[in-house]
Image (cartoon, rainbow, N blue to C red; front, top):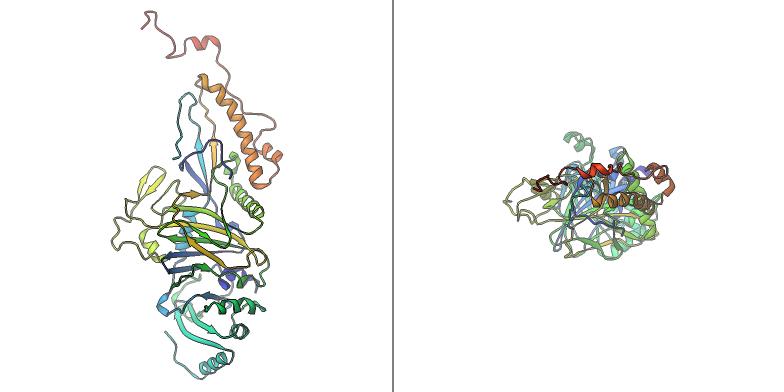
Length: 465
């Protein structure tokens, strides 16, 4: 039971800135994997006008015969509105939009540089009896489909307790006591999309991992039900939402949408194995607490036509179409991006997709309502990006070098303070790991006075030429 809840909890209910701000460039060196978080679910939402395509990634690790999901949907779902997708699509979305660690290298301080911001089965006696039982409980089986490795039903109901009883009797492990939540969905006129694994079909198809379920529907409601899965959940759940739209960034209307701290310069030791993941977990938890556990966090917002720096290649037109992006031109200019150094960009006009990545840690106490979304016209690029800056190690000397070495010591101390502020980690421990306690950043030895006289390029010839 616990294992099923961890896998299907979502589906049951379906400014800190550094002193020097840099444009989106640098060298990508690490990213945050959603597997860092326990009880994590992922969904992709493609939305345009009143049309929605929902892709639900099934992170289920138990016996397939124990798998079952119940999803409130705002309208009747026909068979051809359901599709079995590819897990790799969600994995690619995750990798492309993941918060990332990037590197910069200080320039020679003697060179000034300006940084710009830049199908129903035949009835038989057992089926008849099952349908009669459903009717007696006020439950109507509006459709039956077998698609891929899943047996799918579309249900409506008159009373929540009758629906709860029917689901339990038929092996859908809805938390007992969920009648009040089911009732609220029934009052909204919502139906229920329920699915189980068809073991015979799964064996025939040869899949060992359950593939994502995709549902396409039309409704003015742009929302994601999450309440039912929290009825008896044993702790907070993690949810990652990848929203693909035409106009711009997606945000929630009934909870605050907050940008995570980004573009902060941090100590170099975060590049060590697992350190960046530990940092991000601690930082995210601290931000959740600061927002009283009631906010949705923006991790990424970017035009799908390019990325900088790229944690993964942008999705191709074919991949976007498989996710449900139905407005792309039938003959795109190119499916191959143009590489420009650290960046990747499609030819102009070949993309019309904006990706928003949201991350929420939720429980019943702090999220009493389902998530309701709206698409905005904001196309400002944003990414969770954390910066490592390496010191210049050259030997040139000029009037700027003294100031540079002084600022470097101050910068390292600020990096320690920023890390402590973001994570709550002990600053003295951070300083020790940065070796700031025993020593400070030291400039190279000052050249002797006579070395300065005849330094190449600084003296004149005897003839004055």
